[in-house]
Length: 124
Image 1 (cartoon, rainbow, N blue to C red):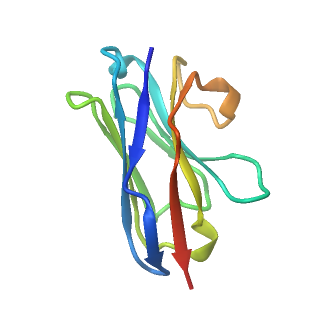
Image 2: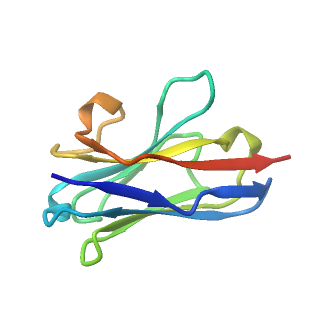
């Protein structure tokens, strides 16, 4: 079982950067595909990015490709999301998720564990 705790959200101006972290408590962190999702008010939760168990493969939604970078440190049981060139439309609650799956999935229901979320607000 994984308990996930996100941190690093906040308020930033458009064009700025933030780095989110997600710390996992379980000892089998390296066995999970890790993903980041986000949910804006009145919208469904949407896929942002995911990383393979080893960290060797990453996947991005087109809306963040070239601006966001996902990484993981299996020794520290932590996954990161570096967000650059932020836009107001990136404003949302960001969630990390762990999936006992073979490869990345973009559907929230494919992931088994979720963090509580961290708010990211980008002002124009």
